[in-house]
Image 1: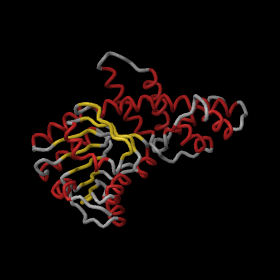
Image 2: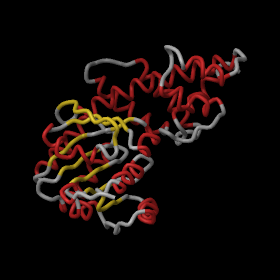
Image 3: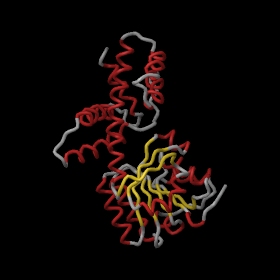
Length: 293
């Protein structure tokens, strides 16, 4: 295991994405401290990694010059930032990998700057698989020089790191990703439900369609599991619903309604009301297949 004293890293938020990302930082020799709101998740992580428990976000900030956050929503990010600021080292860099609004990213950056630190909004795409294998696509907003300083750390968790512009640009790019993911989910689940209704062999459909112009990551990675009615996340319906609400709000600033976003929000809400909010977004296949009953 290699080490880098100048890039000592702390991680806050050990959820489905955060824990494997933190693990990859540990394996690369960068991780010095970790914290999670749920003590159960933190204890599970510490059982597998030789780290001393950090009592708070501020304690993580005291031990690390580079800080990662990976939380669920705007309010969570801003709360965690407030909690870590008392321990923030001068010149520290906070890298937020959450999916939040552009406004929340800018607000967090302002708070960090007031304490002498730098901020990068760096949301990721690639799902739990990408987090585990360190092959995530990372879209970064912030100062390019700051990005250059911490790039070795980012490359421990992501296969592609792309600078998109000033703070907030990473989140704007992630919104693009989430809109596109919603459309792909709608198309793939609807098409496979149609194929099922036609009595076609779905394994062969997935193979032949996936090798042509309609091939895509979602079909490759979720096609077989969804037609077998297996919906382990992945990416939870409830989280994508939250992300699409952010996209909806951003579009409303232009007086625009995005049909794919609006339709998917309705469908996800129905899944959540039926108790499927913690399933993978491929659970949309439940609704699509029901259309043909």
